[in-house]
Amino acid sequence: MTVDWLTPGELRAWTRLEAVAELLPGALDQQLQRDAGLSHYDYLVLAKLSEAPDRTLAMTQLAAQTNASLPRLSHVAARLEARGLICRRRSAEDRRTTLATLTDDGWSTVRTTAPGHVAQVRRLVIDRLTPEQVEQLDAIALALLTALDPEGRLQARCTASEEAAAPGRR
Image 1 (cartoon, rainbow, N blue to C red):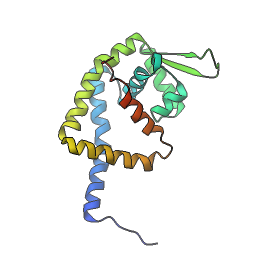
Image 2 (cartoon, one colour):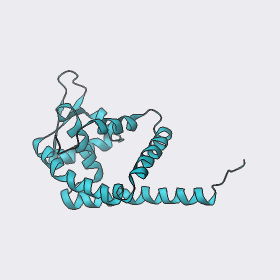
Image 3 (spheres, rainbow, N blue to C red):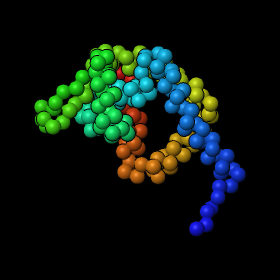
């Protein structure tokens, strides 16, 4: 078997991408923990609910939109529910379906946390790039997502987020 080794330039690009993928989640978690006692995943769950009609999604939909297993999401949902940020209930239409709804306290948390999160995303990523580089980053991320997410689950999440008003602006 022949290996088509990375060129020095490809290796440099790859190792830098790998480093960003390792460091960025921790930097986002740190800000959200400090400001709201939330992990980045906790915030993502709340944000997805804030963008949904009636701030409600079936747990299976929420798991798909946040790229989580149902057990992981259930664990996080229990923690968020204990804090009064979401509530879960059986669907009236399908008793097998559990719905998660963002509470008023959860909506307030999203609205107060979103500005700091956006500032952190800007500080760490967006403001480091020119407008042309932001467009290139978008194209690069889409190309990578196409390979990593061939069913388009998270690509749909990206499109839905683009169409939804930012938390706190509605």
